[in-house]
Length: 259
Image (cartoon, rainbow, N blue to C red; front, side, top):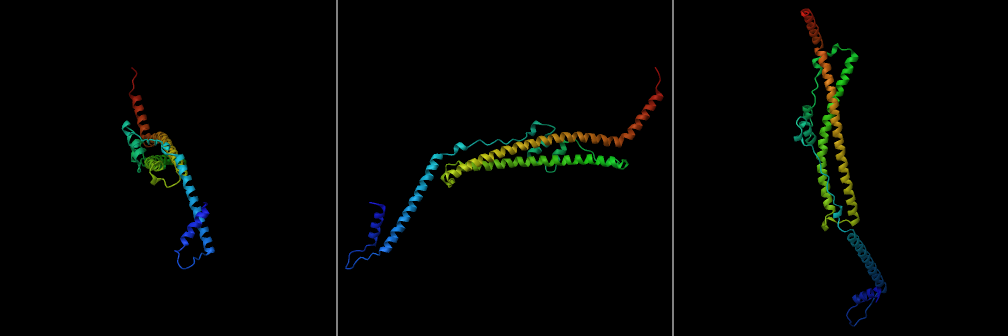
C-alpha cells in the first residue's frame, strides 16, 4: 500500500462517525486539503531525519578530538638566584620595575651636571654636552620602561596560556554538553587553537629578542656614562689637578740634586 493511500484511509477513518440513522457527509475539498497538509508534514519530517543522519555520520567519521591535543609551551623566566650583581634587574624582568629602581641598582650612576659650572662653556660646546646628556636620559627611560613591559608581557603569556588550555579542553572534550556545534565547526575550532599556540610562541620569542636589545643598550649606556663622568670630573677638578701637578713638578725640580 502506498503512503498516499495510507494517509487517505487514516483521514477517512478519523472523519467517520458511528452508524446511525443518518448519512455520512464528506467534503471532498476539505479532504483533499487535509491530505496535502499531511503529505507536506511527512516530507518535512523525512528531510529533518535525513539531515540528522548526515550529522551523526559526520561525527562518527571525525571520531574523538584527543589527537589534536598538543603539550603547551613551557613559559620561561629568569633565575635571579644564579646571578649576584645583576640580580635586582634580572628579578625586575620577571616581576616588573615600574619606577626603574632595580635598573638604577645595576647601572653605572650618572653624575648630575649641577656640580659643574656649564656657563663657562661656549654655546656650541654646551649644546653638544646637553645633547649627549639627553641621550643618556632617554636611554635610561627606554630601558626601564622596556624591562617593565617585558615583565608585564611575560605575566600576560601565563594568563593567555591558561585560557588557551581551557579552550583546548572544551574543544576535545567527550562530554555531549560541550559539543552543540557540528563536527566541522569543532574541527575549525581545533585549527584556531593551533594558531593561538603559534602566536604564543612567537610572542615569547619576540620578548626574548627585546631583552637582548635592552641588555645591549645598557652596555652602551654604561660606556657613555663613564665617558660623561670623566668629562665632568675633568671640568670640575682639571684646573686644581693641573695646578697641583705644576706645583709638584716645580718643587721636584727645585729639590732635585744630582747623585
